[in-house]
Amino acid sequence: MTATISTTRTTTHSTGAGADEGTIHLLDVSKVFGREGSVGAYRAVDHLNLDVAPGQMLALLGKTGCGKSTIFNMIAGLTEPTSGVVRVGGRDPFTEFDTFRGRMAIVFQGDRLLPWRTAIQNVELGLEMLDNPPPDRKERARKWLVKLGLGGHEDDYPHALSGGMRQRVSIARAFATDAQILLCDEPFSALDESTAGKLRAEFVRLVKENGKTAVFITHSISEALEIGDRIVVLKRPAMIAYDVSFDRDTPPEVRTLIRERIGKVLAA
Ligand SMILES: Nc1ncnc2c1ncn2[C@@H]1O[C@H](COP(=O)(O)OP(=O)(O)O)[C@@H](O)[C@H]1O
Ligand SMILES: [Mg+2]
Image: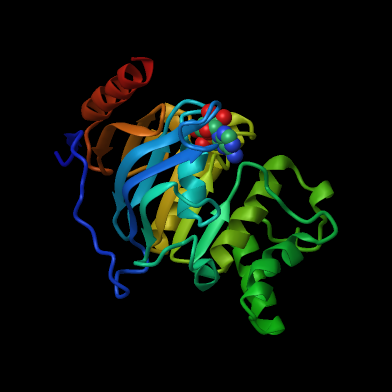
């Protein structure tokens, strides 16, 4: 049995410039919207410590409004923390945003495709921004569309594709950049369950095959259990209530216990 169940917060970290590309490190991170102490100020993240190891697949689980997207945006360098330290691969994603081009790929809940570009042109977009030469980027874009089951749809415009197919295009776009880190904010929550289930399985396989570090945000316990090899359960305001790791050898009875525990933590 390899499941480790603990609520300990890890503080071991590496912030040096030589830190592994795939490391994510949050130390004592808080985010307050509005001016601290003023009326209407809201502490969305409260002294959060979180370390994600290279190659880890972390599911961040919590109810709507608990601060998941705020954490996500701080890791992605889109939001500045009010206090504390955020490091990705040893660098500050907010102040050194430009250096992260091609190192982090993001998949949002909506597919965020450009409607005037075909499927393949949407996948190529990320590569154009990385100054990839045209023949090479077309080839890579095509390869990833085929891997995601969209061979033959390269020249379709988004409006001609189903919701599930559009989200596959946005996943292909994320993988095509070869980024070491994948950040996903509820990417499948707008899809019907059978489509979401298929995409989840493909997504896990692709992340593992390509040795990426992934942070996957979800409000669904089942999705967290399917995706993560580690689940961090957040309680409002974005504090860690439960941190559990497991792997494919974890027996079903232990998974059941983990699921029950998560349910209790979320309900408390
Ligand atoms: N830009 C913002 N300004 C003010 N409050 C915000 C802002 N973004 C998020 N919040 C608040 O912070 C809390 C956490 O939001 P969010 O991180 O989006 O939660 P989640 O993704 O878990 O649903 C919510 O109460 C939300 O209203
Ligand atoms: Mg959110």
